[in-house]
Image (tube, rainbow, N blue to C red; front, side, top):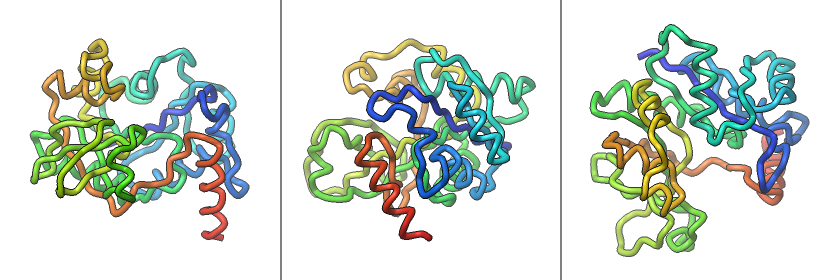
Length: 240
């Protein structure tokens, strides 16, 4: 396989405007994400940016960025638009979609996601899960839970409470798409289950696309609001 890693990012985040450029120990968050993706060495890396300020920050750090329409409705739309600019000939047959708000994601997690596509011909979309961090995760609607078969194939994703003694997997929003799967996903309208759960991966499942999950040791810090940002800054101080 010949993967490319694309990182969608835009300034107009509802809960933390301007978060791609949020300073974390002297480094913009989007640059930290870029560095982690580069360290994974699964393929070339680029940022699919919704704003020129993001492009400028990435290029100042020696990275590559593509300016996309700021009004695109989702990250998957943004990476497809960037892909059309970066690879119109279709050289890259797998696309790793890394969220721009995971400044400390382990490079090994990206490698595992890409590895699923290489190892399993039946896998249309690869993703990542991690063990629950506490029993409270089971009833927290902000924690997306993945229901997996024993072999790692995803059966469902939900915000609802899960019961029983089986492990509960937190979904980590990293995806690896085969190129045809990404095109099919983006061409389809939002599905009924997607609308009900507010989880776009359910659109893929309703289309019949097969999703498989790699297991990470723990969920990476994801920066969605000011308190998350402070947690990320505190973590960065432990690394210096």
